[in-house]
Image (tube, rainbow, N blue to C red):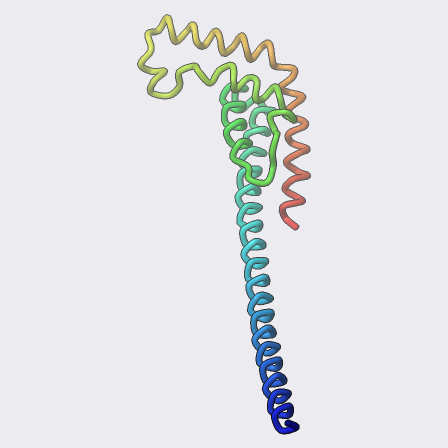
Length: 162
């Protein structure tokens, strides 16, 4: 009977050691997968930050051109709205810069590029008048939004550069 218990104890120890070894291997594999996921997430965040940095650099140029009156407000707000909507790591910018987005929403239905060229002169002039009227109405608010946007861009680009 002593020999039986000795064999049983040795078998139990071998099973326990085997299971502990297997559990150790699984924990090591889990740790490696966790590190890989973390590295992937870091790489993804860096890619998003790079994208946003590029978009913000473009928005900065457009905003400056608008402030220096090298770009009319309609075109600038159109471009800024589309650019700001494409940011991956920022949200609710329409609430932060409402007048820029308001101008875009007021003019986005108007014809542009080739479609505009196809319009009759009278209709083209009517759309130009609509655009100029809306620009004039929102001018002060756009100027304020542009100042806030420039500050936002500077701060956001500094954060993304880290």
